[in-house]
Amino acid sequence: MSRAKIIRWRLLAAAWQKLSDDYPAAFAWLGVVRGHAVALLGVSAFGQCGDSIVLYDHYQIGTEAILRAVKRQD
Image (spheres, rainbow, N blue to C red):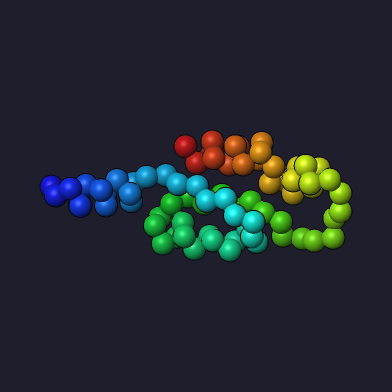
């Protein structure tokens, strides 16, 4: 097997995470294209105000929520 084919196979089989400050479904298509599982986290409603850490917990986009989502993907 050629080196290029090995690299391509490894890239297709690899798990990956993308963290972005966007609407949760903005990049869902990436998982569909490559056949990867997708965990959608993000703000889908607006109007809350407060400390960023409190808001991250409210919207389930804080550190703990991200780590839980990554762990579910393993």
